[in-house]
Image 1 (tube, one colour):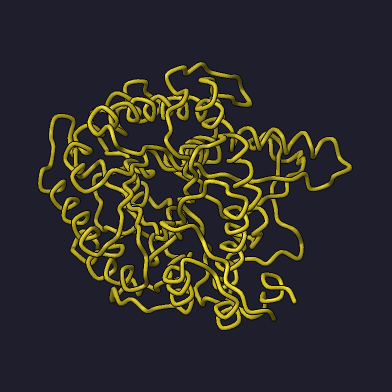
Image 2 (image 1 turned 90 degrees about the vertical axis):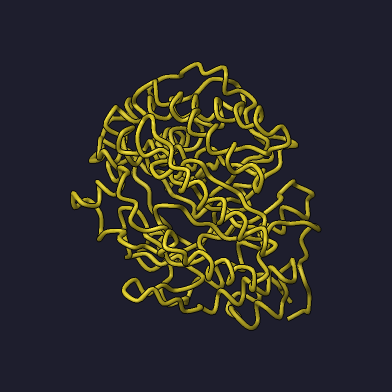
Length: 441
């Protein structure tokens, strides 16, 4: 095997990602806590990773020691604004302390303002089905950004609005558990309006800010290339899942399978594209799935699958996703805001990580404007309706004792961060089974 190093551009961001409800613990005033208590999830979040109790400090220490120079986390709307006319200054000060903690460790913060959870008072008044919620969100954003702007200038307005809308209102996995495509499109349109309002509000408060959102992008192929029905279903699902927000950012029109909506204020409201990539789907026609618009997704029969067959290791799909982003938004910076895999015993994560970093390097080698990479996740956390059954962390969490145990992939990622690159020696040490794929003889 040749000896080589694939280096990234100077100033490249290397970090990890967390989200408030998944790590803070005891977030009792939001819709997800209510959803858990009603028995819709595989276990409950409980204390989570105890960040609200202060254990963010030790996890930030781990990130810094591993050479990470950036971290993306989210703030919890229900903590900052627990009631319509009430602001919790103590909660804002806790977030300020977290941001100071990152800065003191030489880590650049990226703050997500909405990551799937809503305050109960918003939820009880229609949540994102209500046209009023965009205005409520803007007020929350103004208060929060004004309080945190001393320490942060990189903002993500909304995480995966397509997943929030489709999981909550189309396939029913998220609250409120609905199965109605039209409702899902309405929710996504209101989130788009909120994003646009937040984008302008942030720039008004902090002109130098960089503001975007995080898109869950899912590349898709027709399962049977010879089948026009599979090709049609692939196109239908692709447009429905991937293109609503991007089309509106480009044109001011939100495209959907049930009709297009004009949202002119959304046009041009991003300073970067946040790209979340995990895997690629094969799509086919399925007569028995009318709730999914007769579409079915799966992975190839010999795919390299994660613990619960939830993710297939398809690094080429990552490269294609970046290519799509470059072609869709020429000259717009791209930040990989999430990428990772569930893997409790760390048998797959090292090769998944190395192969995906390699594909990202291919993109930067074409001078495509990829500016950073955030790995999901720093430590095992509560994975929404799937609870504690999925382990995405570089560090393992014992939920009962709160003990953290480093996985081998944490050392691989630390080596990548410190080198600002991926070397043949790293691959040979941590995932030799893919050495020939990444560094062919």
